[in-house]
Length: 509
Ligand SMILES: Nc1ncnc2c1ncn2[C@@H]1O[C@H](COP(=O)(O)OP(=O)(O)O)[C@@H](O)[C@H]1O
Ligand SMILES: [Mg+2]
Ligand SMILES: [Zn+2]
Image (cartoon, rainbow, N blue to C red; front, side, top):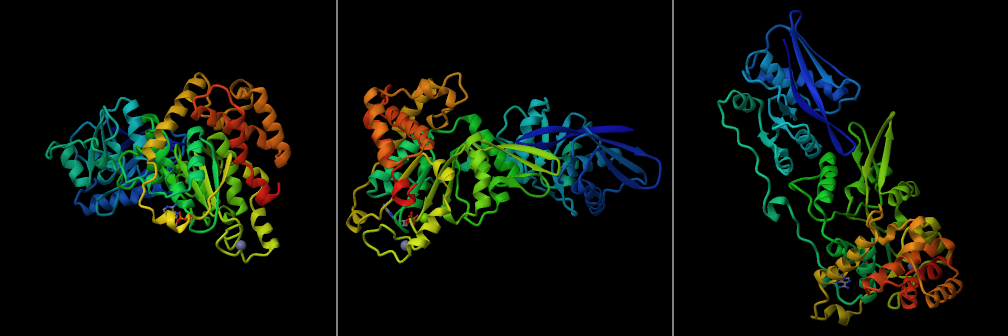
């Protein structure tokens, strides 16, 4: 007798359907799994056999054969424990239901408890696309699964409970989609109103947010660089539903959703500078895990103490920042994760941190400073459209009771500038000024004669490279958009050039 039920695997950020077929034949008692299973899937046989035994669910003395179809894709991880268990319960008569239209995902412990697995959201989305009406998932994954509408998601805690539900002896309660922000897991977001002074840096953050530009903050310890970066998501446009799903899928696959059901706020990821290339870009053993660049997808990646990151780690960043996606290859297997991100980075101007600070003396030698700054290569520096100095805020200003402008107020201007870009890039893949490509450049970055002249003089005065030219123009475009100006004027250009003047001051490039 051959029976089957559905389960799911993960490829990139999408789920794919796996039919778990089972057959029972006369012969020596054994369980075999075919269909390109990895080690975790092979071990499933022993886990499931123990679990059933420990729950008093006896198997007849027979040879059970499982086939995971399609057979040409490698099946990974412990998610097939549950469908295998269900098929065994059906074949041995413990479950008297037709399971062929049902789907199951979950790991089973030796005691029969059902454990959470990674990637449940993309799997349930796929199940829905395949026309499946009912899916059984680990209770710990039910919240994220319930976000998908049009499919009944049943949380399962234990295989005996599942048996009783399938036999109609226990009522089936579908998980409810989270309704309130609190249920969805919306967290408290810090606000720009808490930052005193720092007008120039705040303005730079606003421009960065308005055009999607990467930004580099330079200043002594304690000047508020981390504070500023952490507030960047609060002035970015609201996530679209598609962006929420895409980002949540990645966190689901990484097993990093925690208590959240759906990620509705732009992520902010701040990996420590000791992060490995794999931690940043993705990889690892078993299912290829998304790295920090992808966990930050549709949000902000903050690199604090930029010169402390290893060269190998920073190298991982270079291409994905431009492409908006990262492809990880391992043992002949390729996997692509999105990473549409804004990068914010912070650094001290020297090893001790106080070079150029009016209130502290710097204790570093010229050579040490040069070595330190030299860790940031020219091409990497160029990835940041905006460089801004964050000097310490004077004591009186810090003590001031006056509230600064709120994130909501800044966000309104950002949204208006983004609306212009939305119109501008209709029908193009470009999403914001920072991503304008070479072919679109002439069309979108028109400047008047006077501005052209200003730009030329500034470049000569600052000795800027040709590489910086495009970047300065893109930032000028954003500054003009913030002013609702169709034409890029010379004052827009002048301000944009300012955000590149630190090249000269610190790097002498
Ligand atoms: N402009 C500011 N307004 C209010 N508090 C500030 C400001 N700058 C610094 N602080 C205080 O100093 C602390 C250190 O700031 P932080 O952002 O960590 O500095 P940095 O990252 O530059 O070393 C903050 O937690 C905050 O309490
Ligand atoms: Mg800091
Ligand atoms: Zn110093």
